[in-house]
Amino acid sequence: MSARDEVEPLPGWLAWPIRVLAVIFVVPFKLAWDLLTIVMRFLWRYVGVPIWRYVLYPVLYYGLWVPIRWITVHVLWRPLVWVAEHILAPLFTALWNGLVWFVRALGPFWHLLGRVLLEMAKAVGWALNLLYRYLLRPIGYVLAFIGIYVVVPVAKAVAWAWNHSVVLLWRYLIVIPVSWAWRTLVVPPARWVRSAVLRPIAETTRRVLATLGLR
Image (cartoon, rainbow, N blue to C red; front, top):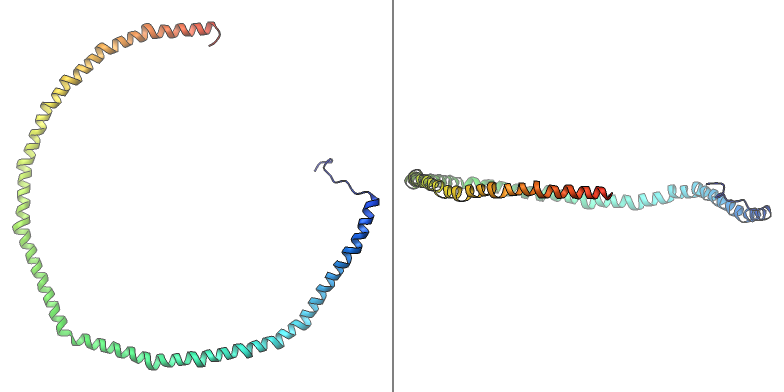
């Protein structure tokens, strides 16, 4: 803050009454607050802590927590453990033993099923082998023969005909005449116009602008 922005002090005739009023109204409240803080600390230390330690805590611990724990252990947990040990465990053991006995009793069936699946796999392999040998492989030979002795020669003939007809016509009827016309009929006149017309006009314009002081 600059000297101009500093707060000017109050005049003495106004500052002293304000200080007196502050002492009269603020100091009692401050003393009352400090006294209340001291009293509350005293009450908590010598009244609240003993009540919590010797009254509320024993009531909550022995009157609520201990009964809940006893009920949980003796009424809920131990019966569940007894049910698990004497009912559920034997039941699951019997079910597992029955399942194992059932699977072992069906041993001949599983053996027969394995033999059937094996024979089916052999039959499928035999059929696929026949399909490949007498159908897919001959078709592959035929397609290869057609590709080598028909498609490739025809493609070569078409390419030769294309190169010696369309390509030659395009070259000698379009590309060469257009290129000759461009080099003979377009480029020389364009060069003459650029050197004989455009450059003198540009040079004259530049000199006129320089003379007028605009360049």
